[in-house]
Image (tube, rainbow, N blue to C red; front, side, top):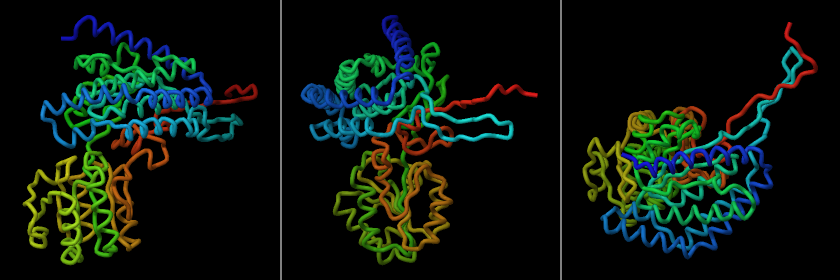
Length: 422
């Protein structure tokens, strides 16, 4: 049961966020831009404090015996901290989505009608091991004129608190309300329950970012709209007309560049027509990079140093140096596999055949589909969004990388000249 103190804290945070959201909605683009640059500067200045906090979190995570991939997501160093600050600066430089006119028209009745972007209000963000999400979410929500209440994972609590403190210091230095970005100062899980309940109407949207259990709880218990980021069960399909060198480079990068991110490939599908020649080369590349392979019968025939894949492997987001491998009888079977086992996140085809690429890009029902490119490009920064706070895999409101523009709604502005309806 939540203690009275934590319950009171959460309700106060909701009220403070709502007040801050009213202020943010009226701010011009320049004010938000200056505040974000100030927060980026503050994060860089706070690097020693953030590193000390992260060292404390890393020690706790290691003592718990958490996986290497989890530790990689949790770990911060100077390079990652400065990259985090650079991301905030990049968001600051983006076009401000608030007030932008998406459409404008005049129907036969003579009214001038336009659809104009508006902030959503207050966003609740619940995330797990990545403390950098604290800065990414704060920056993107602020750019879109929204206040945000953040609830990070317990294992990264001290890191997230240090980042949030630096971010809020930057906001205050430019005269913005520090409560535009708040982090729940308690690891009590009941705080999540209050956020899912909407904090007495204070929260307009919940965004979860984490594993299946977190997403399932949010979807089951939320009483406010949810923008879901589901698991990244990503595929690379090597078509029979793929360039061999390109295929080898893309597969290794898609799997091994960073294995712990949602855009990391988890399954390789390779065409039977080119598998005998190409799969051993790709498998050797992966094996040399430290990747464990789990294949179907045909794949194991072509590369002996491969474990047998089970049905569960096709459904597993490893977030580790493990890759499932299946030989398929062409494009239709590859797309059928993705349709059955994929998570509608990110899938790529490697081919020089434009007709095959066109069919794949049209018919694979994922938020991001790629041709001749690594799945590791599933990233808001790479899309030019500055940063993102997740890859939305649903189909309503936003899909794919969620940046500032995706955290706005719109209203219709109607201008008349004394119009009355007959």
